[in-house]
Image: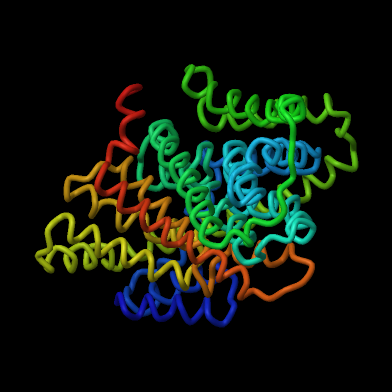
Length: 427
């Protein structure tokens, strides 16, 4: 059954069937051929049960939060401030791309939104300052992946929901790896620009007074981050309630900056509804597929197969890492999380690994999938904001950061406390 499942899924995605439809059709096909039960009759109950899940309300809230920050101009001012503080490093504004992505990720919770937002702001500077285009674009694509690792992350919420893992602990566990990942990305740029100084573009000098004056533009995203994450760990709000507080805070900031208008809110609502509808449809289809996989016994078969290999826990973990790297080349990140988390996580936990730690490791592997061709979503997002050029430029520029992510995977496996240290302090 496993080869049939993989082949059918890849064929459906390969012929450009939308991800949600591919997952739903795969569930119906497997249910029809591998069981006598009328599994399709469970769709209504599955849709209703998962649509009213309280934790999922956080998803449209975080999507709306990112939309407000983008439409109100807060993101543009934030990027300018990051440029003034980081452009002195070898690589100039490429560090601003990564720094701005990390800061925006700490408010939006979405990798695609992070890459699209920062890319829109940064792309004009690439031509003006004569940067190496592939590497510059690679920093945006790679920096955007931080959106699913640095809290508040939509993917961490979904992982917690699917595996019954504490979202609060997952958020704490994502801080140190997220910041370390951003630091490794910047180190990659520094090394590249030391080896090839001409890649670093034209330097823009800023004096101390200009830098200090720009700090005020870093306060809005920091304020929203403190409202969202601070309210969770102060015990004032659940992750869902914290997301709602973040939306209120972003609206207040938009009003303060005199950018709050009916036209802006119409664009915010339109973008929020479009993105939320796509995400929820994928979640519902994937939950139905997981139900079918359990009903036909595929989950148990996969567990028995991995156990029968007789590998050590580390060997099994490395096999899972390779599986995700290969799967990430052919499958969209969010659907990959939805369809595999409930199958793989119990196997990993049964070998003695911490589910919170594995959640963070999985996020890094999903980040890798965002920039690996042929279906690296961030590659297409960055290409879509360009005024000219081919997709190959973005792929070449993102390649060094794929190896940086492999290094991060190795660090997490060698030093699990990178993810578990902060949760251990609070819990």
